[in-house]
Image (cartoon, rainbow over all chains, first blue to last red; front, side):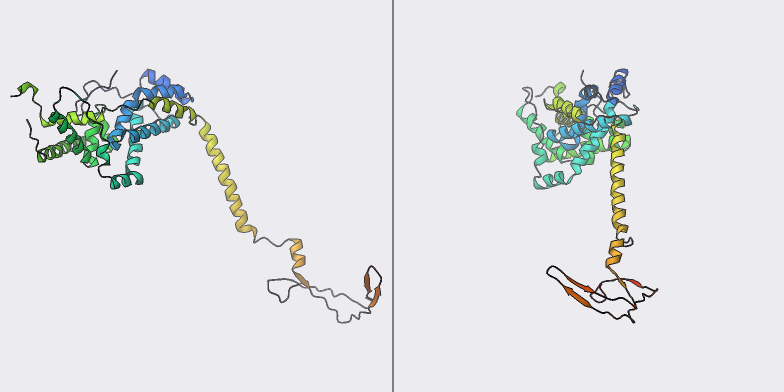
Length: 207
Length: 136
């Protein structure tokens, strides 16, 4: 079953939030606490895509995001006794992955890479999937939009991309970013306004 | 003319572009690598206590060694060191040696008549503090 898709613009979930530990999760957690790596692995595989996408929102590079996600799961496994079940396992690991991703993003090597190749992040943008319904112009517009999104400052890009995963509510994003949910909304609006301005400068008008 | 039903706004395009940027899956080897790492990882059991116990023991040993190095050289000299570096002052004022030298093929021996020698009861031991002067 795919992730519950939430309203991208408001961040409100389309389905009731189930951000708590389920009975099934609890059983696996108990086994994991006793050192059962397979049980932990099962928990991890259930939410790996969601955790990976949060890391991807911060890092914009799939290989880096994968590494941050792997590290997050390892840390979670070794600190499983610290997990008190106040949120779902996925929320807990996502928070760990987010911190790992930020550490990587703020690391000296990453800064150096951005400095040496300003186009680096753009080159790492996943290609727009070919779709026969899209005209060449639409594809070009989508690519330019992705580049504009990458060029946004992190404080605007992070909430935008986390929202785009459809995995997190405004409150979730606020907790991850350490800001109130209201600030998340205002940053989303500002990000949108900047992107529209950028598109207009490139000659694209609202149809 | 485009059908108004199919018209998209910039907002729609922004949503679509951002969503597509996030529609990336972990690579196919992700699960295998994760499971391998988990199996090789330290299990989350009481090992933590043992690990920190071991670290504490090592830290205590290092501390003890540091204390020994710091204060060890200020300890009083050993008996051997004291005998080597001490000078005994003896009053030999009334002593008259009468050397009688005996020479043989394998040894040279001298006999000294110590009659009349009275050792003084007072002896001064002085710790040698370096330099050639006064060295025993």
